[in-house]
Image (cartoon, rainbow, N blue to C red; front, side, top):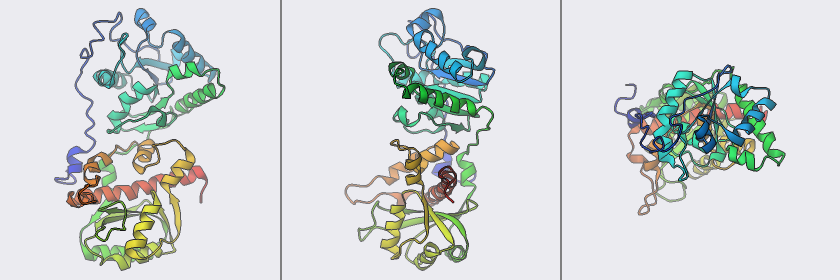
Length: 401
């Protein structure tokens, strides 16, 4: 293994698909058309994943039967695609759940069946129609909590495991309820068009190991000083990130624990900070006019730089959190971890660090200092690398030079 005993490596997105659990929910024994097979010809290699067969769909043995089915068929026709010929159709749950409804446990039980369908059909685009489909597939890629469906709608997410684009769209019941509002069909058609536009584009996604290989962890103090001296003379775009023992730097015992830099997306390194001996060189790097600085929620890095280094960072260029909000003002999507998943399919590596980041009420500090040093540097370095990657894409979208 690349990182020896690293906790990250042992847990590196072991996003297991799970063993077949078909039948655990009990739906199959109570419905008329259990375990419905996928339908459609899929000429455009697009898979539609709905919620579950409706009552009518259960009687007919069809996905997307009834009025909601008619709406998706009409919407596809209106954007120039055929439901029958261009798509395959299936559901997050392939049995009708009955009057009692369903839970995340039922979605989880049917997930292996959905993944088997995807493995068999090998779609280029997977359109996830509604929250259940999103709650089924996102955890196989990202891990962690899915949260509100609304924050996923309209994105095109590259999947490393499925080799396809994941494209969440509105729930059909919402589409049906608000169809008379002209905004609803406009947005729904836009989401479908965007999904179909990805068919000919290869999804570019990264595994954690691929990203870790780009991060250099420096443990030699003399090597850290050498790299900082060099960095203070170089030019380009420079993302940087601190890890500290508290959120705010104002407490007398607040400490910087690690720092990382990513220059031009090509040179990423991280190192531990055990005392203030690196501070003079850090001041030179962060005051250097030849680099345009990048951060996620830059006020945090600015605040720590002012408090611990006694300087203001020179030549700020882009804050990925602010840029994400400008591009899309929905809640819950601006963090670098979320943006990295949307744009590069990067798993939620934050979940491995979360237990160490929680503040201890007794002390007011977190436990990052107790992490495996390699893990801490990996985590810190990934933040800078991904901040740079996301920032460059955001700058293009915002037409910032």
